[in-house]
Image 1 (cartoon, rainbow, N blue to C red):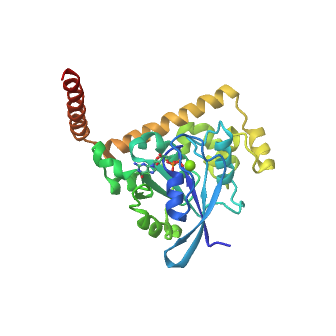
Image 2 (image 1 turned 60 degrees about the vertical axis):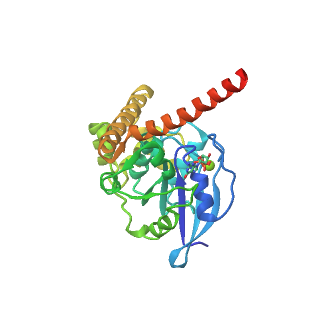
Image 3 (image 1 turned 90 degrees about the vertical axis):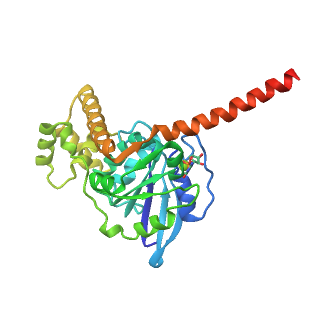
Length: 284
Ligand code: GDP
Ligand code: MG
C-alpha cells in the first residue's frame, strides 16, 4: 500500500504519459495522436521525504461534460471518494502553447475541490514561441500552485515532486463559482442538498455515469430539466469558463510575436538559400 494517490488529468496530447514516465521512471509508449491511453495506467513513484505514491495516467479528456468512454472513466473516479485510487492530489497537465483550451478542464476539476497542481508542460517551447507567463499572478487568479516543466527535457520535475508532497496544504478552493451558470437553479439545488458539492450535483444531473446510484435518482427526479435546457446550460457553462480564462490569460500570458517571427524569418532564409542552391545546381 502506497502513501498517497496522484492522478494525471488533462486534454489529449499535453504530455501526461511523458510526465508519468518522468515520475515513475517507466517507459510507457508516448504518442502524438489522441486516445493512446485508453484506460487507467498505474505506476509507482518515490517522492522526497520517503513518501511513496501511486500514480495514475488517465485517458485524455477535454472536459467533464462527458461524451466518451474515456471521459466517463475520469469523471467516475473523481466523483467517487471511496475509490481506492481517488486522488490525494490531481495534477492537471497542460501544454503552454494551448493553455486557453486546456484550462477549461482545469477550472472544472477545481470545482470538485480536489487538491490540485496546475502543471504547465512543454516549457522548452516558450522561448521559441515568445511566450512569457506571470506565474504568481496565474497562481493567485487560478487559486493553485503551478509547476512549469518540460517532461521532454526533464526540467521542473524535481520541483514538481517537492510540490506534490505539500499536498495537504494545497488549495481546494474553486476558481469560478459554478452557480454563475444559472444562479436560480443552482440556488435551489444548493438548498435541497446542502451537504453536497454544487458542481458534483451538476455532474450527477448531466452525466450518464455509474456512481452513487440512489442519490443520483433522487437528485435527478427533483431537478429534471428538458434535454435542450440541459444542453443550453452546458453551453453556458463553457462560455462562462472561457470568459474567466480569457480574462486571466490577458494579464498572465504574453506572446511576443516578434520573437516567433524572428525565428521564422531565419528559418525562411535558410530554406530560401537551399532552394537557390538547388536551382543553381540544376543550372550548372
Ligand atoms: P498525452 O496524450 O497527454 O499522454 O501526451 P504524450 O505524453 O503522449 O505526449 C504527446 C506529445 O507531446 C509527444 O509527441 C511528446 O513527445 C510531446 N511532448 C511531451 N512532453 C513534451 C515537452 O515537455 N516538450 C515538448 N516539446 N514536447 C513534449
Ligand atoms: Mg497518454
